[in-house]
Image 1 (tube, rainbow, N blue to C red):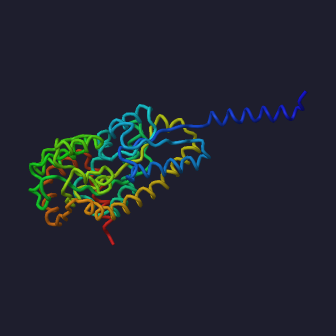
Image 2: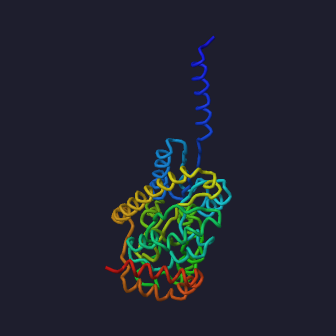
Image 3: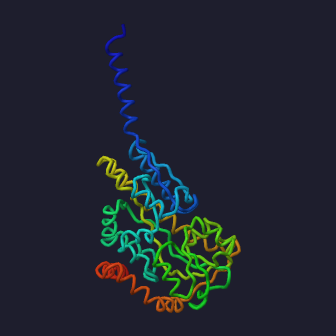
Length: 332
């Protein structure tokens, strides 16, 4: 007969193993952009930090480049509880919570410092606080960057040069109206379909930050890149509320801490890449021209009806808080 202590130790080991297995949580994080883009790099950093902070109990698998669907499809999957994490453009979230629409208003942010001040301040927290009612929980704001127009027809030197172009936009009414307001034929589609659309000339143009142009290899199918900087594109790190509600308080705290660390990494990576990729894209054959401040101001003037429409749509109070936060960030 085995000694009692050996039997007890064996039983304890079996129980511990069973408990450990029961506690292991697997989650999926979907991104729409390739492995080299900051969105996916940030997702992998987040997964790494979550696993480290939970002693390996929560494992987050990252699926890049639209493997789990478009931003809209993944957003719906999070709401339904069939996917756990995503980091879509805030323009996508505006379809659920109209207040998010203010973040995409054209020519609002002058630089990343202003964006950080707004997104990390009271307004950003107010926006994220509206997501649980829609089946989502907002953890942080990440960055895609300032969007520029690329096309195959001509450099965009004046506002009128956009007129007549077939421009792919995000599947978002603000962006559709923005480019329609500049005289373009706006064609909404998922970024996962865009390379083929450009290659087949189904569209002439698209608009994205340097990081997306490079990661998606649009330099192979686009000749001109013009620094319109017409909108700052923020991403929102979000989690399914159904998944979130199943986590313990300690695990939620660990996930939130991992999100904070991944946010610093994602933004830093995005800015470093955007700073260096202009030269790389030129080396790869794109003709790059700077749009003058005067022409950008003319574009903004042409878009006043669009700005007014979406300012009203987001709500007077939210719009007032948005512009006040930008003004505050500009103070010395």
